[in-house]
Image (cartoon, rainbow, N blue to C red):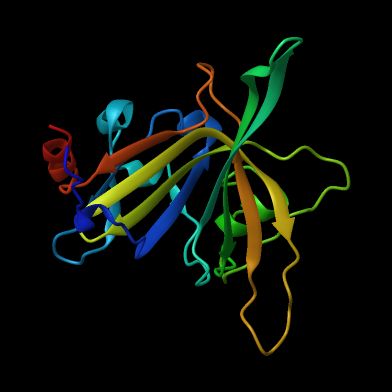
Length: 214
């Protein structure tokens, strides 16, 4: 069979956005769409939320990221089964890690909540643009739901993590020569069914992939 190539299947994440929600409110993923007028990525209600109104009532964006984009790491812990006669005969997967790493540029309540381990929506804005929150010496990080969207033309990839947590943070630098960047790594903890995350893809070029496979 002759080799077939399709350059339309080469993707570049030209832009994207990360949303967060309270864990209880993020069990059901919303749907992402491209606004045909503005070209912006928007969330629309889905599933049970369709009965309640806008998906924006449940999810908030983490805003602009630095130009490093988002780094997606997927790794496995393995254990080799060795035999006396022929060495390694099988490799068993004992665990998997899935993370998204990024640097948030907006010093918004949602970003600060994620960075300092607070539940989404816990930092309230008062009149005059005032806010206050405490950083406890001993506290567990609150899990939350995450919804990550990347775009390339008409293509949208969305990753839904119903149970996630910030596992690492990077020290922000406060200086006059650069923007404050809140670096953090979001780790998928898994749901009740043992799934770390769900990828949903809307991509017209996948039709070409079906033709190549036929």
